[in-house]
Length: 470
Figure 1 (cartoon, one colour):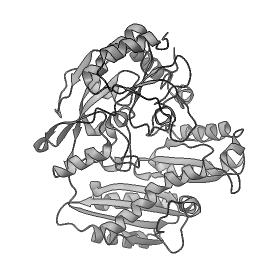
Figure 2: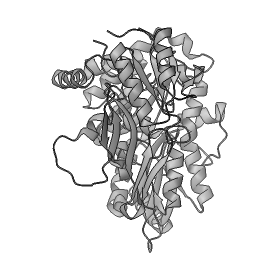
Figure 3: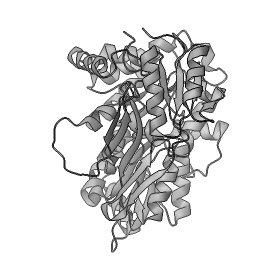
Figure 4: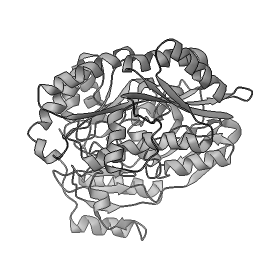
């Protein structure tokens, strides 16, 4: 069992660490973005891996809980701890260096506090592309993205954060450092420890640096918004697009009109893609090699899809500004959702072929509980839907607190019934610990607990996240 850090403990740490390591524990460290979680703790921001090592070794010896903190953009409460002994919040914000560049290998070695947008910019400066992309890329940090195995909009082509990482440097709970910053594509020397720490949400150790995989920059980029009559039509359109363009499709997003209605209601301001908003739309983003025209490819796709009654209308970007306007719509929807205030938000995934039926069955299931507005959108290409439930006009989410548990259970039960996941890309954190226990194979949970006990026997690392505190 761990204990709160006493004044004497903090004095020891201050004496052992460089000036500037301790930070004021402001709300930015202790409140999650949607305001549903409130934490506590003393904040430290080490500038080196050695300092992280000293902090963890001390905390391990004195049984002080440590909560790793990246960019604070997580939505499942993994970055703060509101119950139990007050922890040490360990922020990676000062560890932002690009340690090494290997453009001929398509590799960047960066510290865990590096902001995603800065890593993208460095890759572009080297004539390369770092393909992990999501709405919070201006504040999300590499360590947190790897610790949650973040997804984003380009998973269809490039995979999750896990697929962008070759090697890691990790500080274990006892302070020992694993120097695993390999740049190798092939290394079959035993267990893949990299994959063990990616997605562990800081419960096994702290990622302090990563060797990241870059890719060549797409030479020809294009985008289109197409109105489709149904989710099934969107899925059929994806099949045709993949047959025509293969891995030239970078993203394939499905958007419901409710998202655009929310944007019109509360902002941010965007330019609607169609004169009359359809019930369902897809945003297709492509990146093609030299010699191939995205405009021609998208026009041919549109023509075939119209002939097959899969598309009602479409707009093809005629410039990078048009493409940016399309993406502004998609990336502004989460902000509009926050302004409306969801009753319950769900980051679920189901097998691709089950997406249309899941959407069709979701509304009737929720109608048995009450009257709601549903904003369903997300990454159709990989089966990840953000299925969010909102108050009716004139009401707010506080009016629905009694129905909230039933709404969440109904959506998660339905996803599980289709063989899906209740956490597609946001992680488990503290919010979904009970869901993990409810829907996971008991053998999986037992193996996870055994790994946790082996690597963190005193349970100091992010206690209560992913696995219930023992």
